[in-house]
Image 1: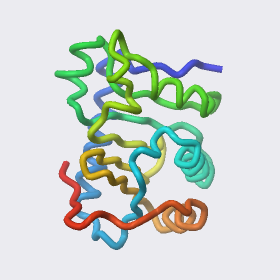
Image 2 (image 1 turned 45 degrees about the horizontal axis):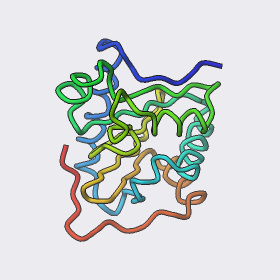
Image 3 (image 1 turned 135 degrees about the vertical axis):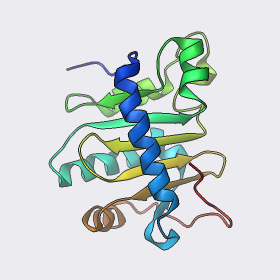
Length: 171
């Protein structure tokens, strides 16, 4: 089993960062009624983790990335902690490892744990074309993907809700 850890290498983080931002730009142009909305605080719960695992299984994959987009991963997180606010979850990792890393003190600052200090996050498969985006200031998360992924998500995740009035995704 490989232990989950932060990403330390800029050349590993940058492609995930770029892909996550491209996904958020895509979401900004998707009609609201085609998106599924969830509580972004679910990022650390077994229920959202279970949804992610199911969506991966549908496509026969196991690995996903979690990337914190805001606060700035370069000027803030890397500057203060010498690592990047993201990680890749693999086949051999567990929910407990996922939760522990999300709540881990990145370095003399427990308030900066990934699962606590984020404005925007993305969860995305390493192979695949769905995305989950969390917007903490709006207290809203958004999920979007191909029709089979969306149908499965609707069927197995009873916690989807409606967006707040005026909600918009701003990349």
